[in-house]
Length: 293
Image (tube, rainbow, N blue to C red; front, side, top):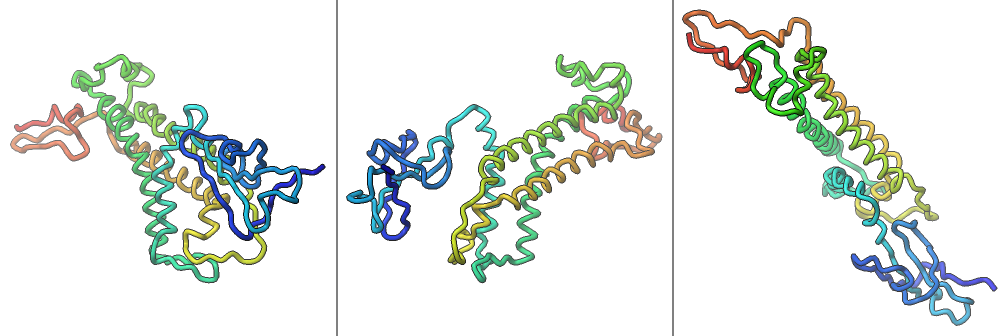
């Protein structure tokens, strides 16, 4: 005999949602047999299974349903990397919460100027993420600690075993130091891409069931594009990765332009006074040789 699971959507639905303990759907619905009616194994909606439709408490006017989301927070330690995507999630949500955007014809109509500003703000967040890594690896280690000026080599270049590679003969130049230290921001960009790609393949790339007719969309947050980002998220991810790689490339190649001498310091003219430029820090070898004369 076929078992019965209510598939009706009319009338009333009693929705039960468990807490942080991750109660299984059977205990949540107080029923020994349940069936998944929407969602997936990570987060899904369950209804009770009955032996027959006649006499079943779940019918056209009422049914009991449970939402199980416990597996969204369970798994290996790599799930903590999702925190890297949290700022981007808030920016995506803010895009649909902009009060200037209006719903016209069941679609969100955006204001072009505000749309451009919001996109640039999101792209600047990626740039900030990359600049934070380059300022430590490329600027502090590769440029300042790795600057070569003979006896006036900065003291930080011999400050620890993890900087011993700065003295290797085949890496004994500022340009090569920058090339090696650029691997740090590139690795972080790769980590961000891998985390975003994994999340997209698990969540966003899933086919969303379509309803018959035209959906009744009254607010931007009800736009199905917010919840089904299969195409837009893939395109925006590629744009952000390209922007991050461009930032690393510019910071790596700009100091190596023809005519730029990274290993020598200008000589002060007698009777004049020289101060280090803004591009030279106190740990740079040039700062110690510029003086009053």
